[in-house]
Image (tube, rainbow, N blue to C red; front, side, top):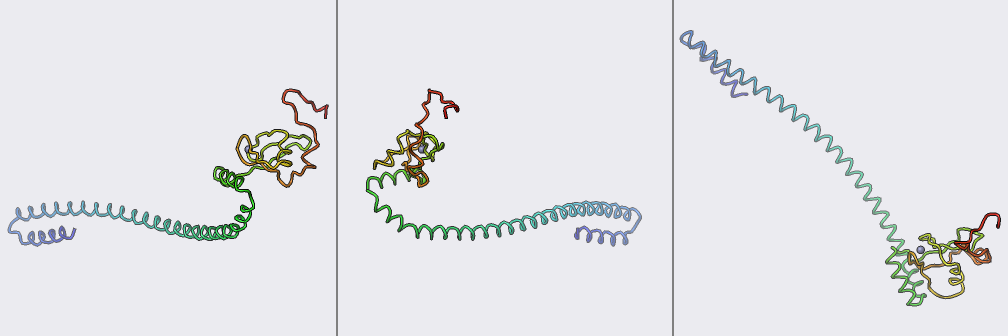
Length: 200
Ligand SMILES: [Zn+2]
């Protein structure tokens, strides 16, 4: 734009010094052409300027967003770091107790336990449950599969490992199911023989 202005100035001077009307007119035409060109350049420049401002605003918004996200990220990192060291401390605290308990278990049972724990994300054992207090019917609490009626006796009186036939976890009797609650109730419903409420 500056070079156009300089050129227009130069043409004006030349125009003032023109020797005749024809030359004067020729300079005038040239000056007008230069002015139109200058106007076009100005318009383009304004348009570009608008674009630049828009982009600058976008950059500003994005920068603010990045700053906010970075703060959130830092806070989350700190929280996770704190939680991680808490969990690690708990693992460190429980490890000797766990090792001690494991040492008391016969090696074959311990191996089975480790294998099952690997397969079930640490949950190697499944407690048995008695959904209906009046019925001697049991389920595996881990997978809800019905179990054979004598499962309680097998676990309670015999020292053998019984796996759930469905999820293959090692079954055990939970503390809340002592013999007085578990046993001496009605035998299991026979699947075919219909029992009605009137019998109860
Ligand atoms: Zn199961």
